[in-house]
Length: 603
Image 1: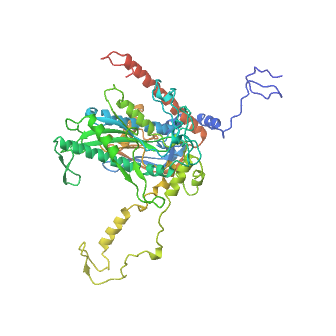
Image 2: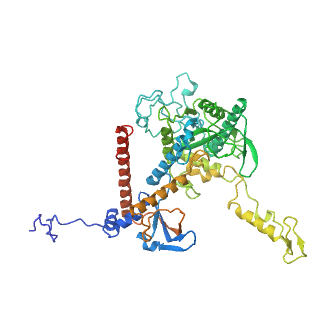
Image 3: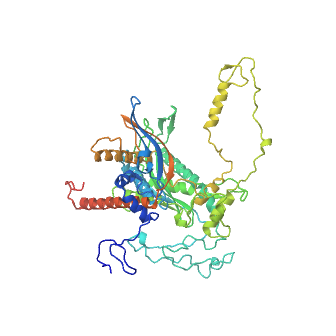
């Protein structure tokens, strides 16, 4: 009988095993394909090649040729084709901001959003540090009520961490026995709820009665919420301009980009906002409103507001605008008078808190930037619905007029966003007059002065065609509700989840370009500051003063070749993130323990 301590693989008898026997590894499994990749001689080269997109869930694969061109002469210094690279492709991260789609890219987007928002409060990244002295407010604007929903209200918190709040909440919707609304709703459902909901209760945000809830009004409000925010900002700026006029501060004369001179108010708002979908599916905004002045010689410069303007003035302006702004949507066949669009209760639905930039206070710049950046990576997850854009073939899987809360919202989007007018047949549409073919007597065009023998002026025809080519391919629909079908998967909200004023802070593109430049120089330092044209990292490149990197790359696919490649790349990226996190914690600990005036070792 073979010994169980034998280290030499050999065929063993039935029922007798050897400790030298190994389990078979199949390359069609994730572990097998990962082992097959790791045993290749070019494994470390492949790992370095995909490092820029290692943590991405579904990276973009590009194929083609890359040329290094001398900028002054146009001479090609080096060239390389992706056929000579690992996997014959360049991997680049997908860049999706949704944490449920790609956690790694969403984490990068969140960090960029944090830096962008915080730079608008304390300066840096090209923003002057003097903005730290500007009045700034953290504002929250919520939607009105469309019907009673299950909620969790804690009047007095005793917990230390709101994320893990275990405080005793109040009853959801209590009613006295003498209250007329304490019985049943018109549809026979209870109009009260005495439950004290836990933080993760699935019924939070769900209506007490689905038939009483106004789903149509909510999706229309989501659609026009961006216009409501735009009008609110304009109303706040008008209020500040009138306040400056009452205080005797003159208007500032500036020169526009077209060369014209105009007078503007001496104070303006520079906002940055993030949209969040509540559990009930209604969008509300968290915004940073910063007060700036206007420089007469440099209109785009960031300067302090005139003396005398304080945070209280900014709070009063925003509160006045939130109370004042309200409008009605255009008529719809289902509702000829339109829907009212306004913010919620000004006393409860609008929250305005001053921001302190010194690191001390109830609301600091770091807290606000981190709070807003967190919501920049979220979408409709709070409602329990996640899907891509819906079409006529797929909307039936999610929309149901008699279904749950989310299904009724999607059905309302699809129903209200239907075409409301029948287009005229092609035979009945007016046709543009067409000139008779051939030549005519010489004539001069009265518009441009061209002499021609064509029936139509060729210069004007070319200019008119160029103007038509510059127009969007899909003409703007006359139906303002048509966008509801396009954004049905977002429950009617079609705006971006993070927007900012042009002068508030830097752009995402600047942050990404800075990261790319850092990676290039980091790679060159690792190579001993020698430009090795035979090795190309899987990162984008920026133009410099001496050479240009020109790529003729085409789309080759999405995702990793095998699940084993995804396993190895994501594991390597997770380890790198963990090392950076530990390094930051150690550096923060050392900075806290190092006396002032002494540089820490980790720095």
